[in-house]
Length: 446
Image 1 (cartoon, rainbow, N blue to C red):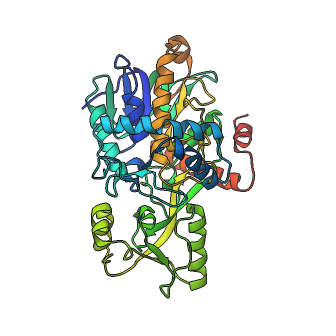
Image 2: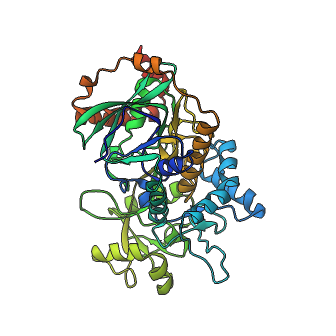
């Protein structure tokens, strides 16, 4: 068992693609600790089915840019959108160098699919488990790094800061059964989504937005905390637990949405929020708990090669996708808001970075364009690692240790996590009612 040290150069919280890619892009003479709340496999990155976007060439830039802005209701940060799109080809090259096997055409070019909101196919994929393929490849590379210590079952409880800089974390180590203070020159939050703080969700239940609650507590700015995307199609089930996502690549390949009488009721290739609203309205009209998704318009061989995991999971639930439609229902899926960060991952607290789904660069606006999530996480995590590297300076150890942090108040860490979950729920409701969350929590600190 690896024991946590008292000091690292960099601490990364989260083992999804953002956390892993940040670790991979740090210099190998920088000591890094990468922690995750449970297993590294319990990240939204691991669950991503559809794929990852790539700019096909200069001819595609305007369409890709406009698709992203239109899906986001033009509330996107234009600089972030431009940065993501122009950096996409570099990220895909990185992934191929890591061994990610994207589907290729006979001539060796990338096979591209299309999803809702895209005017043309620009999404690379590996069957229907692209996130798993990418995450596994990155994790394999990170495990080989001698400068990176990976520690699962390690829960972030708080940050250590003095109002001017972040100096590390307070964590609970399940392996050591202890609350520990860990100092670092830089801390990177890559903690993923917040779906676990709500009911019907595609997210793992451990993803409850702890980093957001901690940032609100310490006055680190957050943005658009109520911008939460609901995925239009998850497999309907009366069973408890996480909802199984039915990727919209299926609709991109030709699947139809049907009402209770098995009639089409919407254009399946509209942006996610539009399709979600259409599904909910149809459920209301029909008085049903779901609508039907019919995959039969797609050639059988395409379904078998592109969507094997979905075929298998539906079979487990008693549905043969080759002969019948399957019941689907919307569920909370992706977080477009988050901890305010610039294009290099910097938050409003020096030495604290945020990347991936837990951050908010504004790249997605009010609604994320399909398959931009993996790209966003990978790109801005790499930029954060580079920013740390270029401007690296050691933190003031005397100032760090002068921060009084009584670990006894974290002894009931499970109670604290429940409080963080309630904070996130409350903040979302307040933001929905038009309250300035940063100002509201500032009042509480005063």
